[in-house]
Structure formats: structure tokens, C-alpha cells
Length: 143
Ligand SMILES: CC(C)(COP(=O)(O)OP(=O)(O)OC[C@H]1O[C@@H](n2cnc3c(N)ncnc32)[C@H](O)[C@@H]1OP(=O)(O)O)[C@@H](O)C(=O)NCCC(=O)NCCS
Image (cartoon, rainbow, N blue to C red; front, side, top):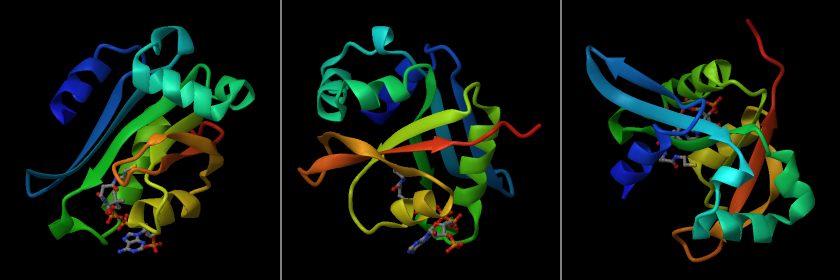
């Protein structure tokens, strides 16, 4: 499933990926792409739009959708996730980014809150069966 999602994301406009390596071994990965509602007509995206409501949905039109951020457990806690996130947002074409994460007290939610992400609303159900937490980040571009 993750391979299929990545294959599709690579065909989207503004696709960006970052990879972290330690001694040439990949230990972390993040990617995303530009988000336009006229391209997002699959059932998951339709549910996202319905749950967010039109006002919140319009805030992420033409933004950057962060699809995946992951660090291998053996390399976690060493600043790699934070660095991947920062690199990805710097490379993104929009200064507004959004993501959905599981709404639990997780390392990911800590990281997002610590780096300026804020709640936009609720999205489709996450793997825990509860509505996902949709977050938004608005960062001025830094060259
Ligand atoms: C989220 C994730 C990418 C963080 O990667 P990481 O390399 O371990 O994170 P970092 O070392 O850069 O830490 C950055 C911040 O994450 C948070 N964090 C990391 N590990 C944490 C832990 N065990 N408990 C609580 N917060 C944690 C902290 O806010 C930390 O900042 P701080 O060090 O200033 O306190 C990693 O835990 C992961 O891959 N999780 C599973 C996949 C996932 O949930 N991805 C996001 C889906 S939307």
C-alpha cells in the first residue's frame, strides 16, 4: 500500500522527497507534493474535504501535502525526523503545508507541535479507527 501511494505521489506536481542516510544506509524518509482539490477526487480525499468543511479545505488549496515522514526505530531520537521535516518544507513550492496524523500522544504529534504545526480539523479515520488529526503549517520561505 505504501509503495502504491509513493508511486502515485511521484506523478503529482511539486513532488519532493528527502532521505536521511547514516554511512550510506537509509534511515529516514519523507515526501509530499502539491495539493489541489481538483486533483484530489479519490474517496479518501473526498472524505477529508467533507470532514474538514469547505472553509478549512480552502486553506490547503495549492499547499504542500506532507504524505509521509518516517525514521527507522534504531535511528530515532537523534534529530533525524526534525531535520527531514525541515528539509522537506524548505524544498516545497508552497509556504503552507498540511498533513494528517493519528490523534494520539505520539512522537510525531510532539514533533509537529514543536515545529509550529497547528490543528486544522479532523480527517478520515486513522488506523486506530478514530478521525485523523489534520494539521497545518505556515512558514515563510527561507532561502
Ligand atoms: C515521528 C518521527 C519521524 C520522529 O523522528 P525522530 O528522528 O525520532 O525525531 P527527532 O529525534 O528529530 O525528534 C524531534 C522531535 O520529535 C519528538 N519526539 C521524538 N521522539 C519522541 C518520543 N519518543 N516521545 C515524544 N516525543 C518525541 C520531540 O518533539 C522531538 O523534539 P525534541 O528532541 O526537541 O524533544 C519518528 O518517531 C517516526 O518515524 N515515527 C513513526 C512514523 C510516524 O509516526 N510518522 C509520522 C506520521 S504523520
